[in-house]
Length: 290
Image (cartoon, rainbow, N blue to C red; front, side):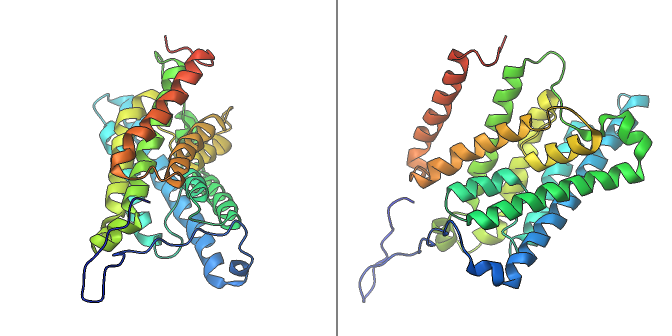
């Protein structure tokens, strides 16, 4: 965190906020608490609902636009579905599980020592299972449309190189995680009492904006559970590609947060780290951006 802000008073200065202690790597005590398992169930249900609504929206749009190019909700409607569902579900589950609904979110918070390893692993398992079940419900209700229109699985659009897709996914994930860490910063919560209540709103808008930018490129896979669930049920190859990139983006932000780079004055350092990594990929010729 940044420097502590001192608040004057007759009894002397002091912090106007308190940093939560870092979560232990292994917390055995939480395994005996009902609230722990309640949080895991909440993550499962939230991810299930998220995939059900969003994948159903994607398939509905493709089926409507197949007959009429101007039909359907369009990219704007799909982006609203993803962003709106994240807003609603984060608001509903924030007090129960923290409202992660994304394995990459959980992984980033693990690196930032916000959650224990045990909680992180079980959260990610619950999220992936919820995603698979959510996509399974869509296939059960609309199997013909599901198979015909690709099951809502992510894929690189024609005309874009793999390198472009890689960059789009990493940058999009970075934008989302930056918003999450800013919206849940304890320093801001102490200064502005309304911040915890409004946190789901900027997070949802970040998801909305990233989808607007990257749907035409990759279909947007900034949530590994979303990519994994759709790929598993549809049977698409390379289900792990988007997940690795998304977790990488969250790892960059989570690591920078632990290195005290989360203040606004240090944002340039964060992007410097990010672009150094991009240059490394280019020099190694892992992907062609041409």
